[in-house]
Length: 601
Image (tube, rainbow, N blue to C red; front, side, top):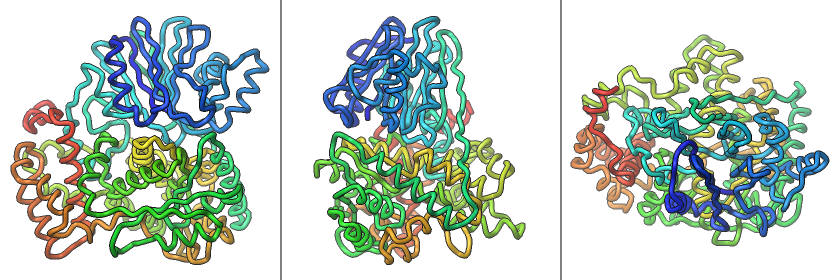
């Protein structure tokens, strides 16, 4: 597991490369390596997971193929044996070491053979120099880039703050970004909150040849055959997960489990415990709060004999944590659970663990969200499922969002879709059933943007590699192939996954109603608390007036409403706006006045 960075058809001094690497060294503290030649440079920060004494990047082949790699390949031993039969030799047993030879043999198609999570950069100088960037099928390992069409140069990095470390990378804020953020809780698609910075989508290969405009290709794995019988489908899913969890436990460093108390992480914990003693971590909040799941998490861990670690977060420390969280994310994410995630992985690392398995993505793969069920049950009647579904993704619906804006900003975003139009077009009118289209949208857009980047950045902030069994392509292929009725039906979501978990997780976890794993921000955001005072300061009218996007009177009204009648939507809105303002302040100088943005839009 690493952090990677580099440039193509440009220049950067050794000091500049060193500075960029230092900005994301938390994700790879064990070794830093670079390779440079006229017109290009590649760099890597390594977090040692496999072959602790090897893995020196960049990897090279014949001095003409140079590779930097971030991720884990769970089939690298089989690929290494295959490549050895073709005459290739390897200096170590690190997974990434096979990529130069694999690329030499298969070219751009080498990604079809990779099974795992990855973001990879390949610099090929055998003929006309070209740079290839590629991401895994789920987008577990983010890769950000900036293409300069005038200079025809490209810069990339695993994290946004590191990318901004390259000289000449603009910090200009994307004008409609605030509206997009409030519409989906973090920007979907390739556009980030920075005007010139993009993120490579999942399952995408970007190819940039010297002097030419980059082109991208998308890959899509075929769904796996799934029996229509519920019991057989559940057994198939259970065995697939059992295989993936077993593979993801392999490492040369200690491995832990994240157990929230819900079905998904409890099932991963149970399957991991089949391989021997495991350690399980759960986070809760000091004091008495709603949605406390610690007793379910403890029950799930003790049911399979796991050693249980309870992490407690003091709500009084939230203001201090928020600033660190926003910095590591590089752009705002409206989910309050970001702070808990950050604190949880800090505790995992402090306890001596470098790898942690999580239960993320099960809801997207197997149909676990209430919004999915609502659309699934509404669509057959001919009633509108689309607008309520989009509203469920937002911090608050469009008509309420716009009441928060100044007149100038409302004019700026008028007619600008906050979610990529092509994604919305496929969601509303694409092929397949409503649930199939929603699943594609969740997996292709919301999951990587809202969940996976959060997990990656906040785990790697503490030098912890998060591994996600439900994102393994064998599991996602099964989930995509399930008939609608085996995902949602008979008043239940995730029907097949519940079937797969039967007998493995305790009855109290298996039979409980689904609830979100979240920070109880509605109760914590109350007058007199440190969080309230911090939010009031960050959202002070003077600050909002200078930016020109949010109407100070409308924001004040949110605080008044939350003080008198605490409400989940109001609390989330205050949290989201607070997070946005913290982000804007941290990357200060990135904002141009709204009237200038509007004039150039």
